[in-house]
Image (cartoon, rainbow, N blue to C red; front, side):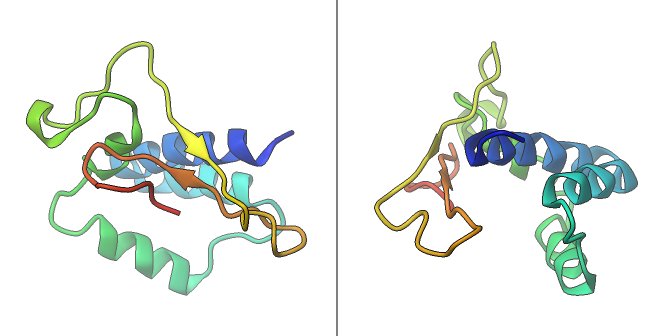
Length: 108
């Protein structure tokens, strides 16, 4: 990926794939992570977040998706990714934020 913003956007798509078909989603997330594939703790975290048929969660990050419309995004699909003054404090990493129709503030 040529920007951290594009990687963040594609991560939302990979999480949607994870919700639909676990192994495909893991493969996509590992690709986006580069030389640092998901470890056991990462996989356990994901499994916990999707527990109880919460497959709608990654769709909440698409523009227009809200609890009121059952997290159905508007088309064309888009994701809003932002940064702040501290997003690039750690060399080699970027802490970006993605807005969600299910939250009051963007998630890191």
